[in-house]
Amino acid sequence: MKISKEQVKNIAYLARLHLDNDRVELFSRQLSQILDYMEQLSEVDTSNVKPMYSPVEHPTPYREDEAYSEFTREDVLKNAPEEDGEHFIVPKVVS
Amino acid sequence: MDVRKYSGIKIRDMILSGEVKVEEVVNAYLKRIEETEGKIDALLYINKHEAIEIARDMDKNGPDPSKKLWGIPIVIKDVLTTKGIPSTCASKMLENFIPFYDAEVVRRIKEQGGIIIAKSNMDEFAMGSSTENSAFKPTKNPWDLDRVPGGSSGGSAASTAASQSPISIGTDTGGSIRQPAAFCGVIGLKPTYGRVSRFGLIAYGSSLDQAGPITRTVKDAALMLSVIAGKDKKDSTSSPNPVPDYLQEMEKYKDLKSIKIGLPKEYWQEGLDPDIQKKSEEFFRLLKELGAELIEISLPHTKYAVATYYIIVMAEASSNLARYDGVRYGYRTKDAEELIDMYVKTRSEGFGFEVQRRIILGTYVLSAGYYDAYYKKAAQVRRLIRQDFLDAFSNCDVILTPVSPTLPFKLKEKIHDPLTMYLADIFTTPLNLSGLPGISIPVGLGDNLKLPVGLQFIAPPFREDILLGIADRVEGELDPLPEPFGLKS
Image (cartoon, rainbow over all chains, first blue to last red; front, side, top):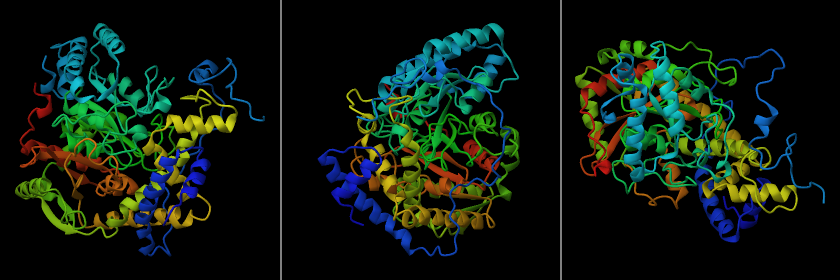
């Protein structure tokens, strides 16, 4: 599977990443190589196999829908790059 | 006191009997850290003042024999959150992140009187097999300072090998406890998926991640697993199965005469390092002398494990790491005009290259048009890989394999070739895909390179007791490893 430089740039943008040109070149080569390797799965017959997304075997537990407070607003805001004591602050969304 | 001599269990016994104070223990380990850290760079944060303060309090109010870890210093991988102590995941993205809550593993350790003495280095967000992907510094292997300690829990494994603490905690998504334990000559236990709560384990591959102990004795691993295992209402994937007292339960499996050990032919092929091959053959002989029966088994889908694993783990990573957006915590770029620009710059500046590579690949395999061909296909092969193991366990009690096809390699030797690095995870990733427990134990030093050789026992789900029993038995039969050569001054 050949991944073009254009594709790398597009996927990177979907993931909200920007790569410089050298990196695009390198990733395009490496991603093609890695995806080629992954191609080998196509030789496995999985026509009647249910996908396994998790090894968990117990049923997903339910809990009571009860409101409780564990942390303070101050705790939660403490690690924010920018906040005003009540909100997270982000750059303007609409220019 | 010479901390190199003691296990965690012994340290606790000495404290309970009044032979030594907790503060002396903590000071002795802090001194050991000071002596060795300049050589191996295993740690990202030393919790000196808090550890001494806690030790003094414990001496004043204790000892409390009901606490399983009373006074034992513990090193925690920096992927687990620790209240009030930086938890960086060895990433620039979380360089200044100070959590306001403890991971459940950490909470349980503290509850039992364990003392968090340091946080250890790792590959950024646990992505890597050499600890060279740390954004801050590479860790060195205590046996040879020019070589890697393995990864991603390379800091924990190197630290424990250097006796900076008797017990550390690592996490294992595709081998990240077992492979560094093998590279550093210590014991590493990856529990069954769901055995240990993942609450506060900063997510990489959520269907694969498990925390577990890295120790210098098997009994210390059993003790630590008894503390950290168990249901947690904050992690719905944590298992409701009761937690045995592993130190007691493992005694049932120490007579190897009734044990049948499967050797999967797909794992024991040409291409293993000659030192590993030779030590393994010696180990097979020992097992037979002890009465174990060794039989050949087959795990036919083994060769697909690496491709399956990397598709799944990168898909999960791309989704999990979407949370780093520069809004609620972590790094934010200094110059952003508007919101999208802020996201892109924050993530491009905050993540290292391996992390970016995996996010991009994960985004690709989940994208419209490719989802079925990659992600769904891998999830199907995953079930076949797990079924191989379940079938094999109808003929044997445990499975024995190498941990890695190679001995610890040199720093920078493989870092520019991601695929080669991924392929070395062939013997460890199948367990994570299947959710099975595995233990890596040192079986000696190689004849040529004098580096530790580790082998892995695998058991059915929730049978850590069998792994620990067998490992404890063979540990008693093998010569103990000398002090790591890189630490001799």
